[in-house]
Length: 362
Image 1 (tube, helix red, strand yellow):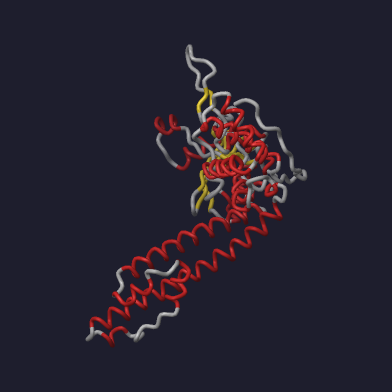
Image 2 (tube, rainbow, N blue to C red):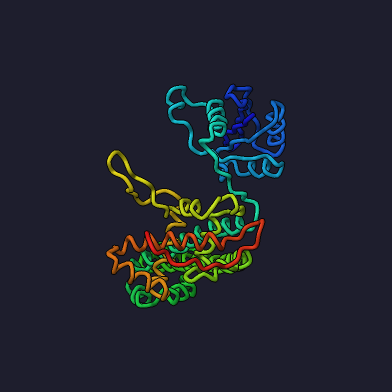
């Protein structure tokens, strides 16, 4: 039999179908450890479990996925509901759970979810935290700059000529005439100056705190990436940030990706067939996949086109053959995806650095 689980914040709704697609039962469980145990026991009570489809394995269903995997249950990621069935039958937790189970039974969903239980998951969490801190730091400085531009002339004239870090350090040393601004309420000029200095000092403190947080996270991420994928960062053009993105895209269980072609499709660099009728052999660029990984491949491509002699030679040869720069970049991104896949760490084996030959054709 096959199980299907529609996941939510506080509850998970499960359904079970047999190998002929007949509904065996459905039930709701709390989204906590005891609920996960009861859910698995209930599904197993209907027969031998071939697989369990879980929705949102990267968010609401992440903890359930880890629990089922730890108990040797095959989990299938199901994130696209059957729109035709939803249009005909409506939507409810029971119907969604049933359609998830049928998607696994019909093999319209076959993806193995990320394990989210190892070093790569820690790297992903730290990268998300750092990204948030970087955005907040940028917002803090933009706000500081805006306040400074509108400051009274003597203070503005002193600060506007300073560089970014010098400006922040100078604002950290600002001392308002009084911490209690109400004491200056009778003198508008003194009140305005004290208020602006207070705002600039507090914004500078915020920027400094966020900057220290980003630097600490950078060190932690670098140490983890070097430990997780030493071969990957040895590739030309692949630094800590780029390697971290590739690791997050592949997940802790990189062996879930069948081959390098599947990894290329995951990164959105596999040409998709677009033939119909009398038109044959036509392909178009993939617009799907992990766009952050696609961006990382683009960055590596540009770096190699500028500083990697074999890549420069390849660009010259393909240009002479009549390919445009965009087509050459597409070919190079596909090749780099192949090389990155060969150097991803895998639980079952030690990844070794390989240098695949440059592609000779699109």
